[in-house]
Image (cartoon, rainbow, N blue to C red; front, side):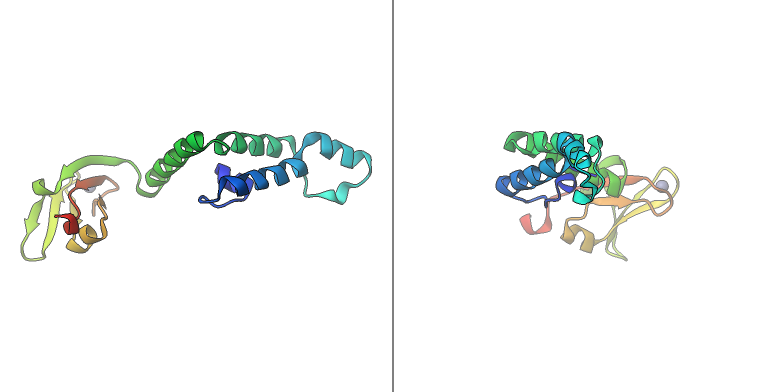
Length: 150
Ligand SMILES: [Zn+2]
């Protein structure tokens, strides 16, 4: 779970709505308040709350409250997601070093497993540059200029 999910806001939420979400959560989850509510016998006051949740909310707020630390966190988040989505990129290769197969119109590159990486023209047009080997789970990143920029 990331800090945005913890606070229940979207990634592009304004600082104002992040603060609002934090205050709401903090009030609901504050351990002291929780104890007070139990002492009053008012157990139905909110969902089951734990100190852990409060700490998470607190930590999320500390990161997201400043635009600098929020920007750093956003970058980390994006990198983590790319890794989760694509795995670890094995190699960076220039498009120029790939083999152009005139018959299919695709670029190919041999993988060390004996399989082949195939880069189609459509992928290049979409700006997709991470390619998985057909024979194993290795990935390469193809370095090229977007066709429209050329
Ligand atoms: Zn392979």
